[in-house]
Each structure stands twice: as structure tokens, then as C-alpha cells.
Length: 223
Image (cartoon, rainbow, N blue to C red; front, top):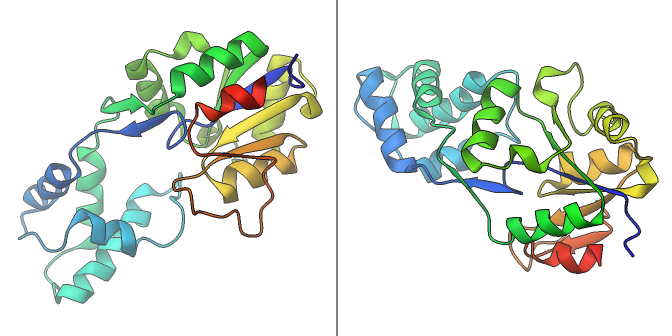
């Protein structure tokens, strides 16, 4: 018998990943902006400062484009215009479940109640949920991007737990971010299962109760 009555999942990077061609999306942004392309998507991602800002996606991407423009000596390119066009090029239907997601969702459902808690807003994240065809797998979906407080604040976790009628000490949160998912779960009194990107990744200052190399590992955690 599992020690948990409910399991909550993060969405991006945990249950799903993007399959849209990053190179084509990047090129399209420059084409729409009417400027010659410089850099590559990988350089942009590396130039971004910290985790995404749900309140200002354009500003967040723009800061990365500004660094790239300076590196390539491209004063003719407006970083915010490029960021705005890149955002418009993102197709949120171009997602797929990660390996092990079906097994994890199945075990979670057999264990008890299941919910989804994502930091993105509903207008963006619902599209992904529908494209993945998993909306009916969750008893509650909390879109923290539309709330006053997001992960790692305890408030969105508390909202999800209230809907599931489950105390925090009987719930597990599964996510891929130490800063937002593990820390947020602990702030709200839940245990956390961290899905790491690579086997040699360590938790650093964070202390997830469980470390997963694949969502399939969650099956054993839940028993």
C-alpha cells in the first residue's frame, strides 16, 4: 500500500517535452523581424538568465537576444522585437509525453487522487494538455500562472490539495525543477520526487525525498 493518497505532477519538462523544430522556429522569428539571422537556438538558451518569467516571456527572451546581438555586433536587431516574434512562432500543440509518463500516470491513478500543477497560465498550458490528451487523467489542474503566487510559493500547492481533499503529508509532487518544484513542494509540506535531466545531476542545496532518472521510476516509489 502506498504511503501517498495523492500525486501531483508538473507539466513542462516533467510529463511532456516540446517537439517543435527549434531551428525553424528561430529562423522564422528573424524572418518576421526582417533582419538577417545571427546565432543559433542553443546559444540563445544559454544566454538566458535564470528560469523563465511567466509574467514577461518577451522580456525574458529579449534579454537573451540582447546578449547575442552584442556578441555578434548586431546593433540593427531589436531584441524585444525578435523575442516577440519568437513567442508568436511557438506552437503549444507541438508537445509529446516523455518516456514513462503513461506508466507514471497509471500508477498514480491506482494509488489515489491525481492532479496537475503548472506555473504557466491556462491559455498556454491548456493547449498542451489537450494536445497530449491527458486532461481527463487529472481531478484538478492548477494553472499557477494565473494566480497571485506561483511555485515555489506554497499557495498553488495548497489550492491543489484543497481540491483533492488531501493533507500535504499524504501527497507527493513530481517535477523536474529543484528551485520551483522541489522547493515549492517542501514549502507546502509535501514530499518531492525530482526528475533529473542526467544521471550525474545532483540536487545541490535541495533535498528531494526521491530522485528519478525516468518517470518509470515513479512506479516503484508509489509501490
